[in-house]
Image 1: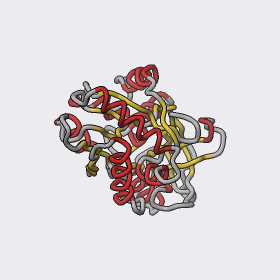
Image 2 (image 1 turned 90 degrees about the vertical axis):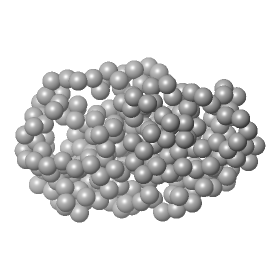
Image 3 (image 1 turned 180 degrees about the horizontal axis):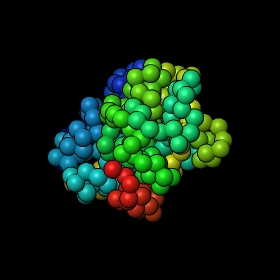
Image 4 (image 1 turned 90 degrees about the horizontal axis):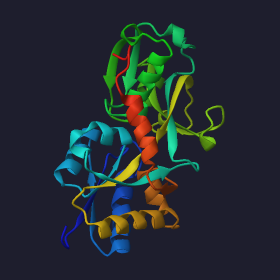
Length: 272
């Protein structure tokens, strides 16, 4: 990597006010911490993020574990950290609908309009479909139309505005208890305070990760990871970090959890 700049790539939640400015500020703080210039790279979609990391255009990235498992070019990236929110390094996926929707149970899923995040999204597509199939839902009959909208906020907005009947997104339950309080959810990304009706819960899913390109020297991987961990507990750094990544802290990546997610994503009957 020499002594040049380092590039940190992320698919920003552009619907979050100030996300791009927060990314610039976060990289400036990392630059100060590391003594190296860290430049932000905002990818428009997960596929663009994968391409940037695979090609070496980005040295570090904030990625979903499913993107790492599915994108061939990311087979050699080095997992550094898992995001922690509400004290846990995992989250759940849900199929949800609008509060006033006539849909109240999975048995009513016949010919509905579905909104998904992306084909590589664990909480916004993959895991909830596996969960539905394992609960006996015929996916071929359940959905009359399916669209990918590239962000959780866009999925939430489409469902709550009535352009889709159901959508899939993440939910962070307090202490990971699916019967407990909801800490955050994708449908509030665009509409803070919005409510939704949950039809199905899947997971848990390992939280998103910070990864490094394999060519990044070990010393710089440690320095970048340590810088993020320090910023999570810094009065100044924690603000932009939460705006960009939404994390309260970081933990080492659980390779056991990744292996379990890989198993869950393997093809199974009735998932097409």
